[in-house]
Length: 242
Image 1: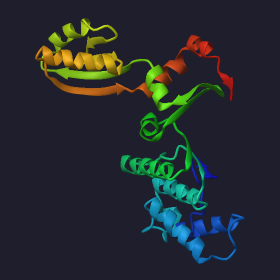
Image 2 (image 1 turned 135 degrees about the vertical axis):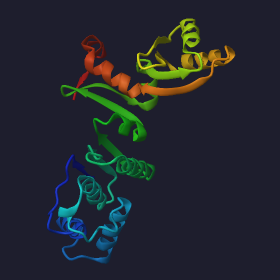
Image 3 (image 1 turned 30 degrees about the vertical axis):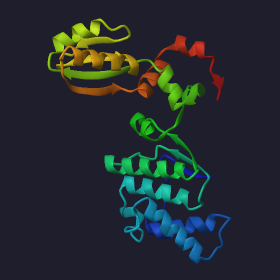
Image 4 (image 1 turned 30 degrees about the horizontal axis):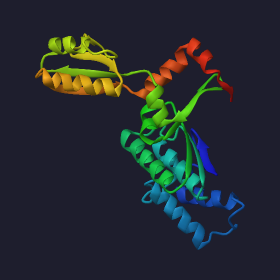
């Protein structure tokens, strides 16, 4: 088991490599003196998180994002079968967050069970295959990504067409689709995938071109807001004690 909670801490006056070496010595599964196996593990961990060229720099000069990546490197030293990560992309720029998501996906593909806690919904959608929602210390929903897609309220979309007025008339003929003109231009609508498919085909038949169709609120977001704001719905779910 490996991992960290939100902000991993290191000795700022030592290099990343020396910090990892000290952590390896604290682990009962390693010997006190550095060995080729330990040094190889440190090299591999630094490379996997993109810090191989900065491994000999003092951690005090690292950015917040670099320290987050070093925290993941420290967790990987033990070759964990279970990896617990709390807000692993805190302080990371978009490129760094994408790199972490890619790394988590690779680890999961290698058979590592990754438990990822985060408030960044986009981050979770990219990498997670199942989800658990907590409210006031209780599990209010738990299931696979497929189950979430099936049970979540309809997703919201931004739509721009070659004739938005005509598109709204077409939308009115489709049950399960709600659409209205947006003050910023275009159309805002909610629909499930199957209904959205039928609507898109109907627009084509009416010779109305889709110029932009963008997901505004994903199934994960809509499920989150439904569970966190609807007390009656929570009572119906009969949540288990966490």
